[in-house]
Amino acid sequence: MPKKYINKLDEDLLNKISNIENIRIGAYNIRKNGQGIERKVTENINIVTKKDNPGIDIYIKENTKNETVHIPVILTDEGLNDLVYNDFYIGKNASVTIIAGCGIHNDYHMNSQHDGIHRFFLEENAQVKYIEKHYGEGNGNGKRILNPVTEVYLKKGSFMEMDSTQIKGVDSTIRKTIGTLEEDTNFIISEKIMTSGKQVAKTIFDVKLNGSNSKTHVVSRSVATDNSKQHFKSIIYGNSKCYARSECDAIIKDNAKVTAIPKITANNIDANLVHEAAIGKIAGEQLIKLMTLGLTEKQAEEEIIKGFLN
Image (cartoon, rainbow, N blue to C red; front, side, top):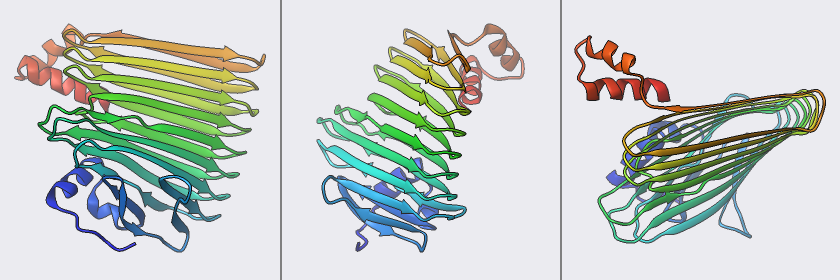
């Protein structure tokens, strides 16, 4: 794939979701306004354009160790509705870091939308760390919309850690993660979201623990301010001897609203399932403590929120 010109705006967006210099170190595929514009493969990682749908297939060879794949997406044109299907095939005993995400710059009156459907197929004893960042900016009235779907299929002994962050500027998002786990697998999910204005964010986790000794740990931390709304739903099925923990912690300010619906279903006598949900405002004693150190109330709130989301 020949390289196409990346301007200053593109670089800024790419740096928001992933350092552009790091992107070009290993295998990568950069997508801009619905088209692939740069790609690099390595001896152990191949990236192939799909023939039946927009998107790519990423193949990681068996026994690959400590390599990275970057697949950032940026949107800068008016009125785009970009739908992409990316499938990852991770060979036996492979260990890889995959860094994705989408940045939208919208200075126009029409909406800009990216829907990314990512499927991960991990063979036995494979390990994946998946990092995903979403970001929106621009002065137009058009909305910045992101709807990521992540499907994870773990074979015996495999492990996946998913770290998903919505930085800011996303007007509407529905984030859905589906996991199917076989025996001796582990799926760790960490989500961080911040909404403001009239933004709306909906999160759905749906994990099936089918194999013996399968595990999952879902942690969602969010901050909702102004008139924004958030909806969190976690569904976990314990279909074997397994362990699961679901945590949802949210801070609300102003007129924001947050709904948390954790649901656990034990279909096996040896399923050990736990869920927790906590929603509330910033504690007054936290503010007072920081303000005695010389911070204004606003600065104190910002520090508390930063620490909470980290």
